[in-house]
Image (cartoon, rainbow over all chains, first blue to last red):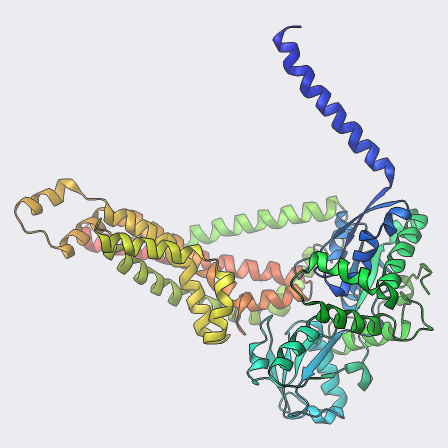
Length: 333
Length: 249
């Protein structure tokens, strides 16, 4: 064999082998990309559990779970074909539908919105919405918390002069320094970390939950496109069943050890007691009522979210919720 | 110079918009992913005033930041031009300082200075100063032998004269670098506003990102681009005026 033939035959064989390998792995399971709403932490523990404990594989799926983040938008990725399924909050879905995005909600993960406000009970008492008067309240301008807080203030009949809204960042220093009295946190993820810090300094913490004052703003849901739902209903059902089983198992007290191990894989720095606390709080947010299955879509919550957004002029008109909310019934009881 | 700069920017911006529209209609994307021209127009009408004021706010900080960074770069560049121990130390310190990413330093600045004007100014100056410093160091470290030789052999060379000769001989390069650094100052200010600010166009973009509103971001980009084009053209014109006054040509 001459040198030139040798030069071409070896790379061609390697290429053929790689093609065969790729083809074989694609046949092993339907390839699916699932874009999380946030980084790999307790707020997405169900998907992480399903991925790490072979629940997707058992359903015949080869799921690539991709981390989310502030700059990621699952709905855009669905439309651009970078993802097949993803997580998005209700406000994202409503805005997207109002602008013609073909996104549909197939399950609702959080029954209680984890976005709440932390405060020091020895200094502040919030028994009624009127107690917000004269307080310095942290909000992320442009974020959900601003929308929710404006709604609460309107409900309390408080105007912009009655409170001081403070622009928050990822840095909690203004709260630690007592410049701000109420600070927005994700109750299950950030709050146990901050509460642990404050506990070291001998300070107690309490939480102001808007839902307890009648303001419901739906958080993370599982989304896909109308086309995927219509053309691949069986794939949608398989994915959702495996995903919700992941949530079910991750939150089951008897599986706590396995769930914590899964979380530690991605978040080795958070102390174990904090992870246990995060998991416990997440249970109450995902399934506050044992009679309501994980993934159930709270239509009334969606209606209120739509109303809030219209009042705050974030939505121009009505959005047809029937076209958006398409429960598939993943079956996690 | 000014109309040409603005015209060139408009060409670039509208080519960019055309590209986006080709993508939108080619792939049948919704207005959520890429807004339609009508949507962009409506956003422009609704946000023009507020975004223009925010851009002016950012530009003011960027100009002050640039002046500080050019001043810093000139002082450090002149002090560090010599191949003495002190010159080398200043260079090493300046280079090391630049090695820290601004996002890592920002929380410290935020704790020390809060999320107001000073933090934005400092971040703008830090991002802008290094390229200017490199150019100043390059210019100031390179002797202009033809001219400097005379002063050296006659014993009349002083450091002020040395700096003056090297600046004069490299005036075009220095003007270009300073005009170019305006873009960095603006970018630096916007980064600062993203991380720690309650005002400016970077802060407005951050809010638009939270609301997934690409239309607002496109308007912000347009205003940022046109403001930088005008500012750069003014700096270049200023450079020409200075050169003419100095050289008499």
